[in-house]
Length: 69
Image (cartoon, rainbow, N blue to C red; front, side, top):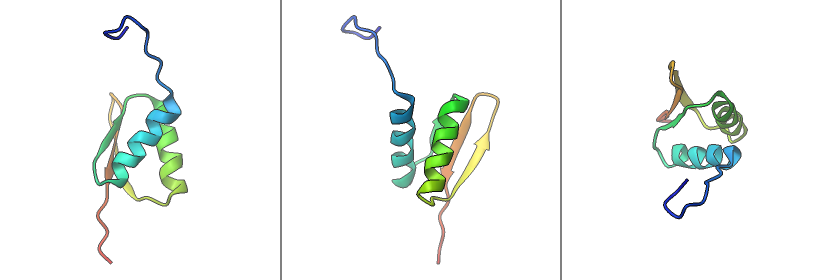
């Protein structure tokens, strides 16, 4: 429950898309669940965004790569 006393429902797809936007802005993003990590991977591939993914026991870090062309 949040401070208003209502339960919060998080849409996993929306959460994944928010994390992709964060990555596009140059920030790293962390996903705890395998489901959200897979959604992030698919969206990054779809948008052709390169990242370094560090998989840990607790989840996955998606770290933007800086390409110099």
